[in-house]
Length: 362
Image (cartoon, one colour):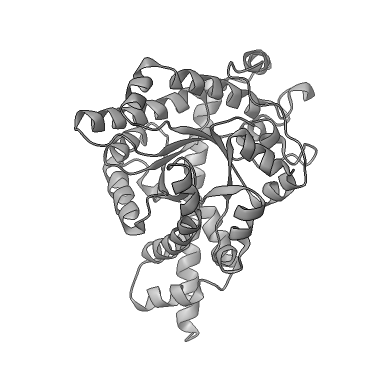
């Protein structure tokens, strides 16, 4: 058996962290579903930017949007929604077979709205309505400014992929926002079943401390932080407050491991997949990591519900001079700023390509 199938059988969902029109048109995504146990996907501005740069598959739609006088942002969301609704339809049988647990795709609101909860909520509701697919998550950052928008989106019945979580504390804030939205639906007599995942970014921890800690701690920080977060999630799912909502019909918010591609060329190419095997979680991975995983025939031991040795490992990082709380805050802030830069670059690519195509009389 492929390691992809073993993880699926363990109870972890494998999602693809990529979307391009070529993946849809040439049958690659259906093949990943059939052969590599892929049951969902995520997207982000950088992924779409690369897709637009490298493929001519979007040219006709970009030109049509330009001729209709649409802005680069309007053109982009037209393109993204077409790709993601097609992908959502491919995953729809999985979504239905798993009673809405799996089979999701994700679309991000503009990161330029990150500090405006009301505008974020309005954009989330509009994009979800435009897609017309129940298995579409709207991605909202789990920053302090994003937390109110997460609660409001859940209350409004919009499924949310909470992004940019880097620590146990950031995860718990996102989980609390999710549950507040659910509890408000219960109080209002609404169905409390609204889907959500909480995306914890892993590899960026190790990139941030590379060369700053003893070799014995190399590539161990992201995994230890994830172990700590997993322990907190397991405890959260056993809390009386959550169990009350669960009893009323709510579904749990799953943990999603993001940024799981190995950055260190000396480390295992499946380091953050093999080390984070756990039931009722998601691992979203780039294509290279997915292909690497498919070449293995075994997986690591499942994560321990009690966090294993994470506190010992994290204490060693603290002793080495790494202040974990401040680093988590910095990583989240850096991530939010990086999303803005990626968004701006994406808009620039759309604008440049539309002008070029229009000028060429395509």
